[in-house]
Image (cartoon, helix red, strand yellow):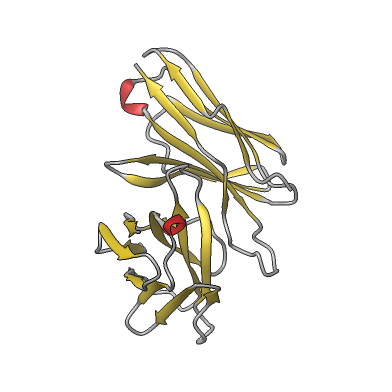
Length: 115
Length: 117
């Protein structure tokens, strides 16, 4: 079974600075997808970024980027120029490449942004 | 598109009552998922449908829970009878499992916060 581990229950960052959230996963598959979702206090789950395992290039979405280390099964999220609106729970998720019926989520990291 | 629509946003009920949660997926999506989120257990997949057919309901906690998808644009999650331990936020998500840039991305509704007294 695939598992996703987020070892940082809480993180904080100063506004305008950079923070990295960690995620590791366990799988025997070679083709899969990895995701970061954001859940603000409104509780809406919002997709932040997606990485396809067969792509070596790290995904980037504006201030959000990932460091995907396939051999190490590591998938960290870097938030640059942090903004107050980035404060939220962040969930790392894994799904198999053939379908997404088995999406697994980590326990989440609560990010606080200090003004 | 309006996104995944769930109703109600909040539900308060008494133990023993029947509860029905509703979900309208994004038009054109062929997979639908029901999740439960609690502090203790995080996000748990309860059941998912492909093309309106239930594929895996192994996450459904017990027989008190049932889910249906009578057509591509509507699904329900029913709890009967409800118990206090069912209190949680229930999310519905939909996705497209065929090819394309959006493949395998799950889009979530705003969730239903259920409180069973």
